[in-house]
Length: 317
Image 1 (cartoon, one colour):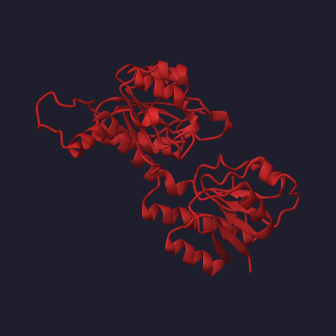
Image 2 (cartoon, helix red, strand yellow):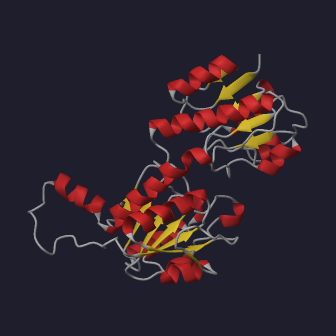
Image 3 (cartoon, helix red, strand yellow):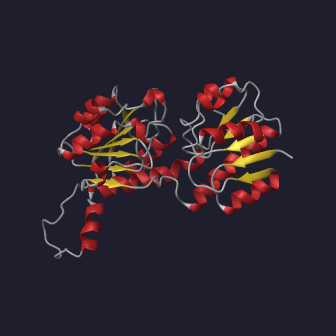
């Protein structure tokens, strides 16, 4: 029977289905795999269901001309932790779970937009501290979200889902920058550069894919182009943003606030960032809803099942 490794605990319904299809080994740790574990996985299993942090880079594949493992069915839409070219050279197919994560990730973007603009994190800490003295007209004044100008860097499935929520739900004017031309079926204006997007936006949301091409694409120059009253939100990958530069502009008050769900060296979050009152920090909650994680798992299993049936997996990358 086909032998599969699942590298982290998944929802019970996903594991049960996997065990009905394959001979499954479920890794009992929640931390990313070591390089030694990943190299062993290429030799011991027919397929692996890895996820964020399982860094199948070129060094993992080095020396494997024909590994036993023939498919990596990634649990997640982002796959920048997998060197797809190195995998392909070793004869290993890589898949992901794009459709299953769109709405949940867009919802987290909305959560962060509202939290940073309306200073919800600060307000929560104030109440919990026991020092709140009661309502008054000028207490904790934030940014009104309705009708603001939204800029989205990266207009794929998730970027467009965020734009729809902001346009139809909050009456926001939507601008976006994308490497290819897009013509959405609702009002949204494509701009030529990230700098132009940053300059024009009241709220700048990063929805770029991860990978070497986008590393630090949101750099000091882009952040400096933002308005002093603007807010920045990142729900993509942590290393898309120059985190040190972002901390600097937040410390200096050069932008009003930021909402982050991802970080450059997860799970490490710098103390300088953690102590900032004008930063909302979530622990990578983008897809953290049971039904979403179940859907992701079943998409990964669909890809595995198709591959071992001799078909092209629906989400090969």
